[in-house]
Amino acid sequence: MRAFPILFVLFFSHSVWAGNWAFQGGLGMEQGAANLALDLDYKSRPRQNIGAYFLLATEKTGVREQFWSLGADIKVFFGPKAWRLYLAPGFGVTSFSFFNGESETTLGTLMKVGTLHQLSRDLYFGLEYMMFFNWFSDQALNGFQVMNATLRIEF
Image 1 (cartoon, rainbow, N blue to C red):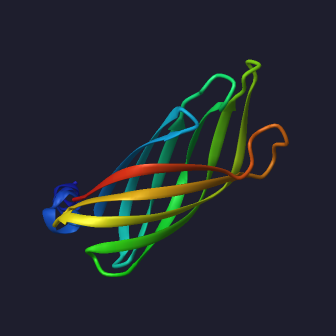
Image 2: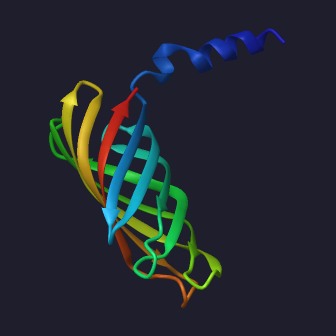
């Protein structure tokens, strides 16, 4: 029982958490429909983050079907901190809602390519291009892309 307070202090101490986390949000438009992207990353190495992502792409009737995707990725950063390029391969679950009222959920990979410009010590602005590939569905989109303007906060 005495170990619990010590573990609690270590777990929530500022030195353990400071500067190791980042939240990145993105907004975009593709074919007249809106995209919303959210990422939560943990800095596992100086130029590498592991994290989770969520993407919601809304429907544009007759043009693009609605889908959402949830999964994990690994971001690898290149270049100086003021202008950073990153690649982020990942894997996730994607669910499609088709125009005919049916829906389908599939597994697949993704690749993110992005650039970030440092606005302040912990704030970045950039662009992110995401490519999704499904492995198991013939009906769902394969190789679809989304581009978003992003804002990243490191804490």
